[in-house]
Amino acid sequence: MSNIGNFKRVGREVVYKGKILEFCQDEIQTSKGHHVTWDFLNHKGAAAIVPVMDDGKILMVKQWRNVVNRVSLEIPAGAKDTVEEPTLECATRELEEETGYKPGRMEFLHTIVPAVAYSGEIIDIYVAFDLQKSHQNFDEDEDIELVAYTIEELIEKVMSNEIQDVKTMAAILAYYYKYCNK
Image (cartoon, rainbow, N blue to C red; front, side, top):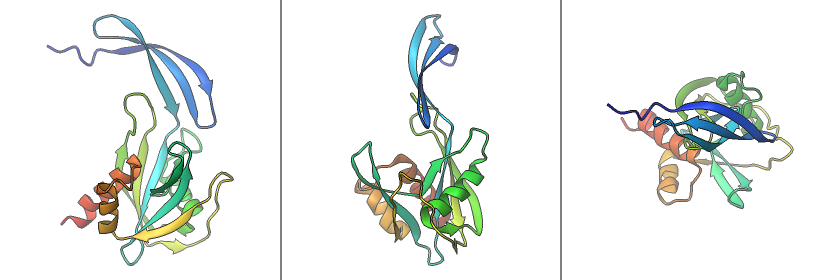
């Protein structure tokens, strides 16, 4: 019989608290009784959206990302304001802030854990339909360009490595499988 799941966190120390992340060191008791220290990034969670235009194209955002030091092509997304905020509320807010559209209808698509080995970030992904023009309201650190693509163009961008953002890759592939691959 396997003991693979018999790990237990017995302690957590917050080493650094930033704007959206806490860097923690967790004390873990392994299945064999050893005590080890694991790094953990605590995150309050996020939501992302696949915004589908009336013509079937998907609205994407281009924005500069510090981690890769370049512009990245992504679906709209953002962190929850609080741990308790429902992700549907977060997704609706972020869609309007980043794209200037309100959804007429939202459907849950998928949940992802982008870095399961060391981060507590969990992202719920939604699909937005019946988009209604509103206005963008960027955060002070955002500068976004909107572009629209067909699902086939986006699949090609994933497969050619032009899109590397994991939430965007997962969302595009899940959207294609659920809505287009009939």
